[in-house]
Length: 384
Image 1 (tube, rainbow, N blue to C red):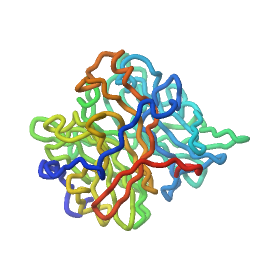
Image 2: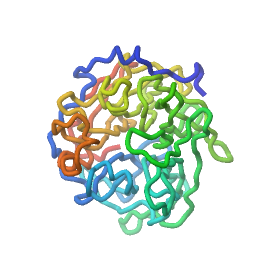
Image 3: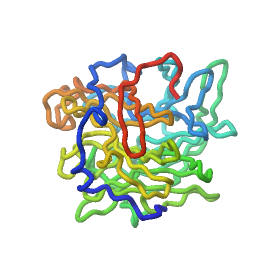
């Protein structure tokens, strides 16, 4: 797929990394704003898109999805209870529209991140990660990409996703170009990936694609990669990776593409604990640019770093998503409590420092392969 083969994110690039005002997010004062769901954690949000990439509007409000789970126990346990939530956004306010799918509809034991696009026939293609197996006694970590296609109805101002319909597996790792993501035991940062499908329509030819966070072999371990699949009449064809973290990082997440000024910007998130060596680069949004979807890709700002958490709050936000208008959404992760790694803190300590809601919006400026981040001043008009 990539004209010059996969782009390689290497140690040479990381050595060029400088944390400065252009690539460092402002410190967030916790709590930054009221929780979207008072009794549930919310993270990894994405808009329902129109096929041109804009945010879908229904009943005068933007439509979004996010992962959610009851705000109980250690925050990392939320991944074992994750469900996709439907949200409506009106100006700066959010309305909870409930779980996107009926209980037990997913073939997995929980639902992880994805993307969604509204179709001309009134349905919504929801691409998400089905993790584990429905009905399993304890969570396992098999990951595959599933498509659900419910009808979207607006009834007297109410927005409703129909509850019937098939959840169909459309992609899984092939065990060749990509390692199988099928561990029985594991946890955050310790499992191979085949998740976070990001839908993208290439404006150059109108073809649909899915970008997937994947894993490839590297020595006796595994490395993060961005897989890509192309749509065809019978489904989706998995193709060679767009990017491989060549010895740099074991876990790339939430890959997506934004086209701006005729360049293709490939963005993804990763955490400081996933780098080799650990902590050699900040938790942040990273990216590459290319003249076309197939490459060749060049790291932004020389190193790939686009938005890093500030050193005084190294885990304050995560799971950035760049919108077509270059606003950037994420969620509030951990406030610094003096622990080196909040994932290993006790439940009460970790819970006290966890945000579990949507973070303040940032804005990006893109100029070729140079970028700059700024805090966003909320406006009265809807996002999107």
